[in-house]
Image 1 (spheres, rainbow, N blue to C red):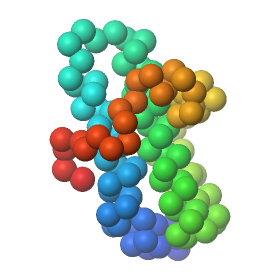
Image 2 (image 1 turned 180 degrees about the vertical axis):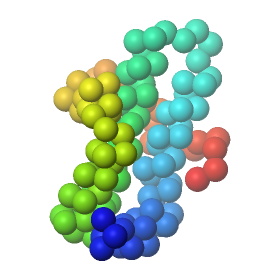
Image 3 (image 1 turned 135 degrees about the vertical axis):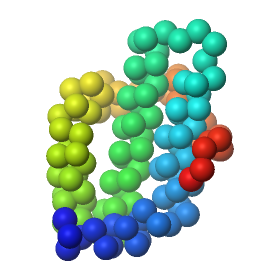
Image 4 (image 1 turned 45 degrees about the horizontal axis):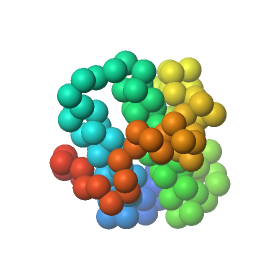
Length: 118
């Protein structure tokens, strides 16, 4: 991880494109949940999982593009270790795929600006 992390940090995490796409989209998803008048557990679960998977997909795409497959593999392992299998158990990508209609119905549009600091 230490070998690949400088590239990931410099060429991905510190860039405006990462902050404005990956991070903004996830924060806008959280904002959407916060703004819900009547929270429903299933809808909230779907929204947060779709938002997480969209962030994860976006992050991995940029890491692979900027730093290569080895960096992507290291990053995936790191995220997997940091979150354990929690994200795979609670938000499996095959059930909460960004392109599925269930995600399209709950995710904010890409041009929505999050309220939080990027």
